[in-house]
Image 1 (spheres, rainbow, N blue to C red):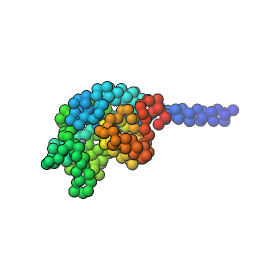
Image 2 (cartoon, rainbow, N blue to C red):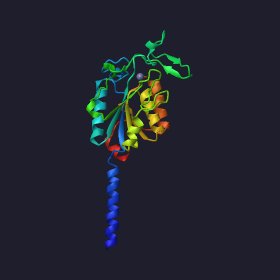
Image 3 (spheres, protein in one colour):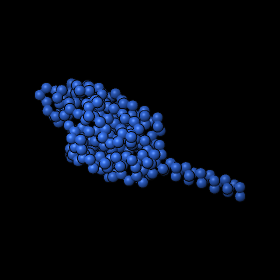
Image 4 (cartoon, rainbow, N blue to C red):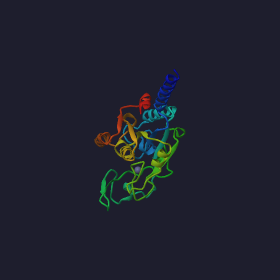
Length: 238
Ligand SMILES: [Zn+2]
């Protein structure tokens, strides 16, 4: 009888622990990518992507609130360029935004309108900052672009991976701007760093439809889980 009770309490304990683990505890975190004024039509940004209007920002805010309510920490990346950044077309004589150039080391660089200059209003994160636990800035080195929140094109890492690992995070839920550049690169590097990665499609906005389509295919092929929209209940199963 006593043995039976012991087994019963062990089984009950395991069930409780399993239930607790399913509650979307600290091992799941949000990585919000570059939700900044310059990338949104809502703020008439210099590099505003399609459909990045106020209703989009409201949707991102609402989703982030719901995930915080579930106990998830929110890490936000922020494009943070010096004025002389190499990705700005204005810093290359005779070049125009969206033109691609070959760099000395053979890589291709897309040139952009001047955007997210450090401390400018365009660089501001445009959802309530009280929803964000940690901001990770990227693209600070004038010589390298940095689409990824984890590292720049020269291979220099940001603090994002260490911050996540220190918190015991194993799964990241990623959304933001832009699907085909910074979201894609952050997702791919997140997978490489060993995180399980979920990307929420309708909380992302892309620069162009063809490159965004390719980015969704690549992210899925590399192992990311693509959710059409956010269902906070599904977070329990991660
Ligand atoms: Zn940039």
